[in-house]
Structure formats: C-alpha cells, structure tokens
Length: 295
Image 1 (tube, rainbow, N blue to C red):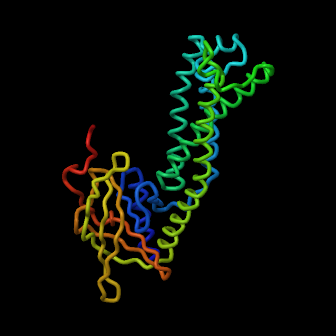
Image 2 (image 1 turned 60 degrees about the vertical axis):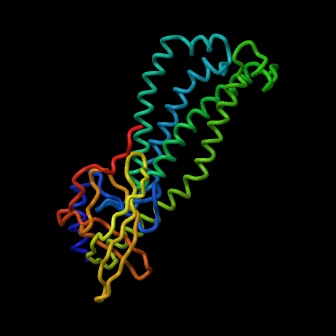
Image 3 (image 1 turned 180 degrees about the horizontal axis):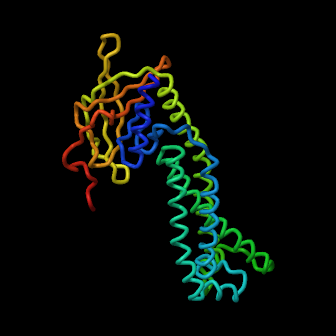
C-alpha cells in the first residue's frame, strides 16, 4: 500500500501545477477539498502574514476614497491632501499592489487548505477588514478632532457637502461583512483540515483498490469557470462489486472519459476517497464541450 502511494505522490508532484480533476464523496462546490500528493495537512500560520499584509494595504489604500470622497477627513487640509492628484495616483498604483497581495492570500489559502471556500473567505476578510479599519480610524480621528460636532445620520440628507456619516455607514457595511466572514472562517478551516486529515490517513493507512469510472453526469453548473459533475466509480472488494458516488470539479479540457482507471481508498471507519489514476495514462474528453458559457 505505501509503495503504491509513494508512486502516486511522486507522479502527483510532477502534476501539481495542472488542473487535475478534484473528487469528493462527501462535499460539493467550494467545500470540496484537495490534498496534493506528498503534502501534509495545512496550517494557519503561513496564511496569517499574507492576510495581515493584505488587510493593512487595503486600509492604507482605502483611506483615500474614505477621506477624499466620503467625508472621513478630520481636517480640510487632510481632505485636500487625500484628494490631491498625486495622492490619488499613488493610491491607484497601490491598488494594483494590494490586488496582487490579495491574490496571494487566495493562493496561499488554496495551497494550505485545498479549498476554494476557505480561500474566498480569507480574501474577503482581508478586503473588508482593511477597509473597515481605514474607515474606523478616520471616523475616530474626525470625531476626536471636533468633539463638539454631533454625529447625526440625518446629515446625509441635509448636509450641503458629503458628511462623515456617509463614510461611517459605508465603513459599517464593510465591518459587518468582515464580522460575518470572521464567524464563518474558523469553521470552514476546521472542515478543510478534517477532510485533509482523512485523505492523508487514507493514503498512509487505508486500503487501496483499483476502480473504473462508470458514469460522468454533468450538473449544468460551474464554480467560476470549472464545470461540476457527479460521477460513479465501480470497484471490487472480495469478489463483490461495489459502487461509490462522488462529486467532481475540473477544467473543461480535463474531463475524464467513462472507463478511466480510478483509485479508491477506504478504511474501517467507512471513509472513502477517490482519485483519478494519472499514472495509467488518463484519457480526457477530446473537446471542451463543458466550457462555461460566455455571457
């Protein structure tokens, strides 16, 4: 079993940059979890620096629109500074940097936890948390600078200029979004880690069977531009034929054909994991007929 698994791992390391089909017998869509061959269960620590840096950059970038456009500038001089063409130009350049950093958050989350749901929540937390922090700091600075000014939401409709109340509401929306994501993220990470631990255990200690892909059914749905399928894999245990159902997500040009060789991993707990046997020369649909439509 271990020799076979090691062979899979070496081959998988060569294929790790290819959009291999992803299978799950329990989850679907963004909750489907992968663990690249040769990798161990992910960790939170490598993601945190990316998350904090991205949030800090969003906070810095967000200070320009919040201060110059949404009234959250403590003094007219700071408002003019934040609205100056040079400052706006720097903010636009910084925006490209922060988008790259947020992409790094997403990529690092996928690398660690093998799940697009965790990656999406992490990137959203960086954006919403950074913008909410920027708005909060500027609002506190504004109110501290002029404590005699009342904070009245009616000023949004009555003020001849853009009042800080408007910026406060926009910042509150981002703060609410960040709070919602922050509540969801720990559970999603825990779920991904459990799935990765199951896959790692099955590869090291589970029973390996050779199976055959006997059905590939398109659900007419896509996650981003990746088509979603339900599949069936047949295999034999003690001369008895068994069938396991699974969800599959892949790219449009890597849809395995019926009859492809599969690997089925099981254990005494009843946990099952299926993988495409890439070492056996997997065959894929010749045309990208499952590509996402262009609207």
